[in-house]
Image (cartoon, rainbow, N blue to C red; front, side, top):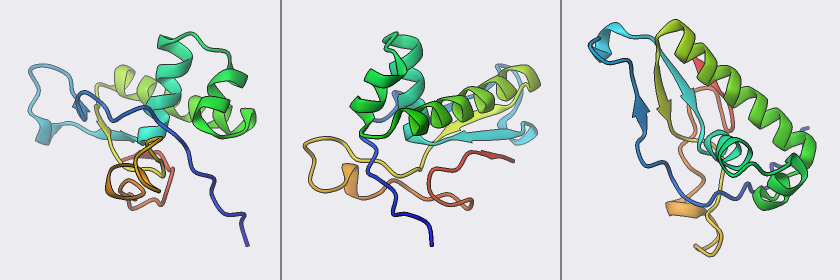
Length: 121
């Protein structure tokens, strides 16, 4: 039986929840999904330029978990950029610090692949 998932803290949701190549109808695009905690890992590492130890502490996870979440998010975003796919940011298992037990009304939506998963449809 797997260990219970530790709450992953994020500072907030995305400013936009989808990004797509311009000039191609959404119905004609493949898509990838990045969970909210994947976006947070990208933000902490690539935008705020934090080292993995500090970023992991901010998200309330181990450095190894942070590294895995970051690597998966980078892989999914890279696939979308190279293959011309739409990026959808949604779901995952996260909490906003200071907002009840769980952030924004619950654990974030769980996608069809389960909590914290990255899907490439």
